[in-house]
Image (cartoon, rainbow, N blue to C red; front, side, top):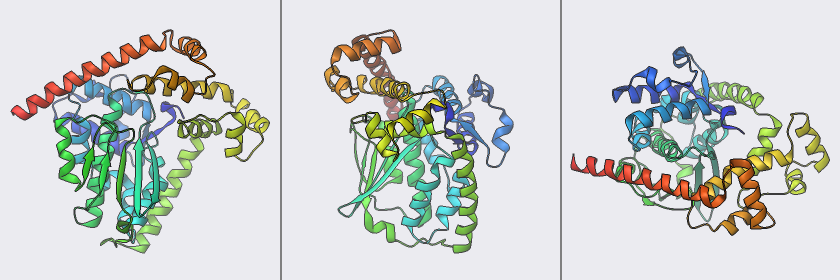
Length: 356
C-alpha cells in the first residue's frame, strides 16, 4: 500500500498539531503543503492520509528540530485519543481481549503502521514498524506508538504493568529515558526489529472497566470504520502488503499466488484490471527495501541483492540505477552521511537537555 493510501485518524493528527502549537509553532506553518483543512480536526471519525501526516510531522520536525518529539507526543496520548478503538479496548473483559481489539481495528485509525502479534514459549511478541522510507520520522512515529501504547495499557489496568523487554531498532538517545516513565521493562537498542515482549499471563488479567454492552456498541462502530477503510484498500494494496511482510526473502509470482489461494494467471489478471502488475509492485517494494537495507552499514550489497531476489549484484546495480538514477554505493554514502548528521544533531540536543 502506498503511503498516500494509508489512513491516520484526525484525532492523532490533531493531537500532534496541538502538541507542536504548545511548543510555540504556528499551525499554518505545520500544515503547509499538506492540503489538510483545519476543520478536519473538529470532525468525528475524520481521517487524513499517511502522506499528509508525514508531511505535517516533517514540517514540525524541521521547525522544532527535536527528534524526541515522538516520545513526548506519545506521553500526551490518552485512551480517548484512540476513539472507539480505545473504548472497545477499555471495556474488554481482559487485557488480552483489549489487545485483540487493537490488533483487529488499528488499520481503521492508523494503517501506516505495521503490527504483528505472536505468542511462543509463554511470551507474547508485539512487533511494530512503519514500513515506509521516511527517514528520521520512522523513529519519531514508532516512538509515539510505543509510548502511547504503554500509556493506554497502564490506564486500562489502572497500574504500571510489569512488561518484560523492549527491543528498538534505533540507537540510544538520552530522551529514551522517558520510556522508563511508562514501562517497567529492560530496553535494548540497535536491534533488527522494534518489538515489545511480555509474559503471556498478562493476557488473562481482568480489566477494571470491563463492560460487555459497551464492548458490543464500540465493536459495531469499529467494524463500520474498518469496512470504510477496507473499501479504499485495493487488491494491489493487499499484494504489496504481502510482499512487504515477506521482505526477508521476496516470493516469486507462483509463491505469492499460492498465498492468495489462486493461480498465478488469476493474480496477474486481477492486478492488470488495476493497471499494475506483479513486476511493478515487486519493483516498488524492492526500491523501498533497498533504501532501508542500504542505510544499514552491516548489510553487504551482495546480501541486499540476494534478499531482493536478484540473480547477481550487477542486476541489482542496473535496477537500482533505473529506479533512482544513482548506484547503490553512491546512495549508501548519502544515506549514511544523512544518518551521521542526524545523529550529531540529536546528540547535541541530548547534551542541551542534560545540561538543563
